[in-house]
Structure formats: structure tokens, C-alpha cells
Image (cartoon, rainbow, N blue to C red; front, side):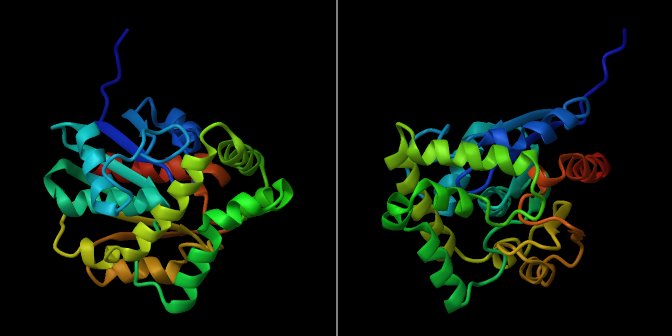
Length: 253
């Protein structure tokens, strides 16, 4: 029986407050085409402790250490998209092609948005709200109320109330601070040349299309895709559609 040859290693990075499990269904759908590795970022519930800090550059260097010397296909969602962009900026030769799914920090944040992100991420707020409010907050950004949302909310609540809750809550606060302090992706990706895909949901309140389009000013050759009916979590709201999008992009790259 012939074994289908992989088109390369595909590394997946999850979003703020999430884990590699968020990519599970997409990873399964892509496993016949790529050697898929979904990483758990430092500070996440399933990830290592962030010994080098919560800023974008140390996180990107941690990812590069996990990748090794291999040149990979790289996709990141939300916070993972911001980190993936930093990886590509620091070591463009190690990224064969880059897909950013609703990445945070595409454009500079205005004062109102900065205050919103800070308010949502403070430890004092997260630790003091009742579980019902925590569930509502964890589901913010979803447009499709399905099993993906239910699973994400359950994992988020478990992480923020479980044995590593203090670490997880601290990480959320400091990771948000790291995103706000970092140069926007529109600046960091200027001068890179690897194939670039930008994806966001048409109903995404956290990484709206107008923010992602700022990257096009630096990378006019990038492919931009806005998914109708989808919020911030395409990987959980419509895994087959996102998997097909990534498969086509990375196969061509």
C-alpha cells in the first residue's frame, strides 16, 4: 500500500486562554496532507511555564526552539497569530509559508481598544467574577453557538478554576500586556516575503477585518479572506472550512 507523502510540517499555535486542543479538529482534517504539530504556548493551561517572559519576542524564540532547524509551514490563531508573525519576522528563513487566523495586534491599538483589552484581562476581574459570568466572557467572540464554543468555554473555565489557575490568570494578564506593548504585525511583517494568508471572521469583534487589512499595506501580495458568518474562532466555529482554506494555501505554497 502506498503511503501518501506529507507536504511538510505544519505548526499550529493557539489563541489567548486556549490550548492546542482548540486546533484538534482542524489538525485531524489536515493530518493526511501535512505532519501537524499543535503546540501549547508558555503560560497556557497545558503549556510550560514562561521562564523567559510574556513578551512576543521571547515567545517567538520559544517556538523557534520547538521547531528546531526545520523550515515549517506556520499557522496561528489570535495570540498565536501574533506570535507566529513574530516568528516570521525574526527568522523568515524558517517559515516556508505563514497563515494568520484572526491575529491580535495587526494594527496599532487605539486608547479605547487598549482600555478594553486591559479591563478584560486583569487578574482581579477574572478571579472575582462568578462562574456564570466567566462562561459568558469565555464565549465572547463566537458567532456560531455550537460544539466548538461549548468545548472552548468548558476548557477555559476548567483552566481558570483548576490547580494552575493562578498561573493561567497571571499569564492572560501579562500576555495581553505583551501584545499591547509589541510593534503591530503590519510593521513586523514589512520586508518578509514568504507566502502569507490573512483570515478573519466577518463577525469577529476581537480581530476585525479592518485591522487585518493594515498588514496589506506592508504585504500587498498577501491573500486576504473574510469568512462570512464566522466570529473570532474559525478553527472552532467551522473547522472544515478553515481546514480546507489552510490546505489549499499551504499546498500551493
